Image (cartoon, rainbow over all chains, first blue to last red; front, side, top):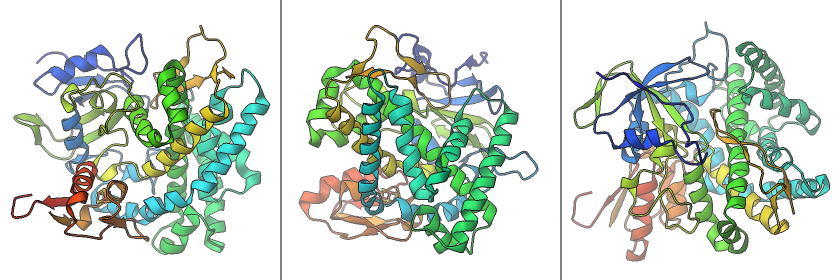
Length: 398
Length: 69
Ligand code: SF4
């Protein structure tokens, strides 16, 4: 048995942070499912089966025998990954039960009805960008506040609480914090979310969290409602913020592609799908086998083995298209991807994320048609090693 | 073309509604797919196949007339 290879958690090519590392393409070609070592800030380094092909990724992510592997354990310290109410802590029937309580809020119809609210938030951020002036950082002035404010609206966070709420959300996602800081921060988030839940219990607001309390409050404990709120907050904004920043950076480096996003409203939906496929901000998705089984012919995954699906390289699998998937082509005919995962755990908020991207990106390039990087020669400060890929800073001028 | 829904599998991702709004809708309270037309006309077939392809839960079953799924 050869030694497992080390697969960095964010295995991106040295030269281009948007491309998967060459090593990922190599193992994609191997006939046998490779075992790799995955470094992880939350779990330490672990051995895992690496899934890198598109079809394998779909089968793995929709297979009930592969579980999330983070079932809530009340005896362990509470973290974002160990919390009642967080969908990532549940499998099978428990997961469906909880998920069904939330899905009504994310139907296409509901998400479409949120469009005016999102447009208002985007308008206000564009004005803030203008006011911040040349050299403004797109990440802090535009990409991060948009999804945060949207989720504040959905949870019913009173305006005066926003700053604290946003600060705690930021700490929760900062990989440069210690485990102790994370636990303390989650305590603060829990405390705040408890008061919010209590207020909704008293008088359910006309928003997402209020709706869940109204419809399912009798079935859910306060603890679960707090966890649901925290999950929506974290899941609902970091990935979307990353997509906004990374899309802007990528488009600024590809002006012909940017022009399509700016000038062709009918191309926007397809362009967003291509950006989602190409950027894949949630680089990997981990699972654990509940029993022995074959994923593809003769390739056994053993009970207890961890599995990591590399979303980034699965989206570029040359066998899933006759076109070159390493090329960014916002006019590409629809190319399915696994950026939001697949199967029962496929991202609950994906339609909301799409709506935010669709409203925000064209608006940005239309309002500032001459948008460019402040210092054209400077390298963009990409965040390549975090759990969620992104851009640290994006100073722009226009 | 005959369309069927495996309702318990649906995870309410809504791809079907985007791909073929004439054929699929979502229930307001829980987002579960609602089949509007089990025998969609010819010009909808392509959209329905796309919906079945995109559905992350394999909840949409398409049978061509007389044929296997
Ligand atoms: S695409 Fe599939 S999972 Fe999503 S709503 Fe339609 S049937 Fe349900």
